[in-house]
Amino acid sequence: MSSTVKEVQRQLIEAETEYVLKAPRSKVFAYLSNPVNDKIWQGSCVDAQLHASAPASGAEYSIKFSFLGRKMDFRARILDVRPDSDYAFEVIDGPFYYKGQYRFEEDGRHTRIHWHFAAEPGKFFGILPASILRKVLVSQIEKDFVTLERQLAA
Image (cartoon, rainbow, N blue to C red):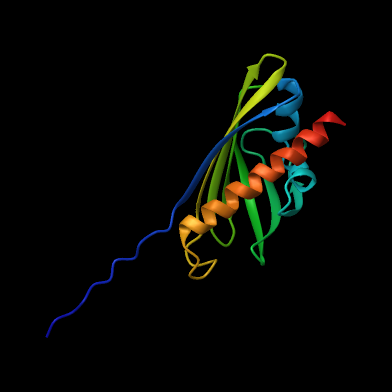
């Protein structure tokens, strides 16, 4: 008698991109480091509520997304807030785990944003391959950065 052991392969999606915004670093950082603004500039974000008086390391927030036809509710935590430099966050409760980071650099009178995102969606999106999820995610964030630039120009 033989038995078969199936190895469960974790589906990790990582994405990185850079974007230059025509706005001062302090303005870009202040906007992006407040998760409440996500519902304004991110096309897939339906709602975001900060559960603290201000964005700070350790502060928690609730965020809702609609992405690829799926509705998702998460509770997240701000991991790191270094003014005009870094902002990082991670999920503490939700349908799957993700984390992200923004790094900010002066680029003349503009701001260069380095964005990194990692998620482990498991089977949440069914049989959709990680490569397709990553491609859709990067495409969405590129559109979102265009929206962000319009918001910051206002």
